Image (tube, rainbow, N blue to C red; front, side):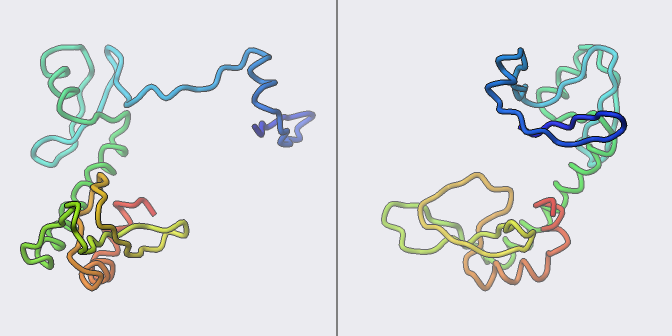
Length: 166
């Protein structure tokens, strides 16, 4: 693991093996799941009306209901970003549904039809891909053809950038 070390106002990166750090008492950070506010801490969430609202957490009925049904955020900016992403997903999926003209993906064992989807490559460029048997969880609906997927990339590029965070 590379760590910054500063000596006499000069910072360099030193590569220290993880085993040595652990032997010295360092504990590897563990993901604790989604963020949840502490009592009296302010949190932000997207309302059912599509607005961003804020409450101070006090473990009352409203707080427990919001935590059970919504994703809460530490800052207004995080909540607004999540709202914009959700709006972009809805716009793209509505357009895909329109272009798919009622088509639904088929993931049956004997399916030989390609189910097309849009993804972002490591350079932040959008491309199409396909599969026959996967039911991967995706925010964006499958497209009935490569032509539809390419049309979505052309028409919805700004929304795709928001969705894929590129």
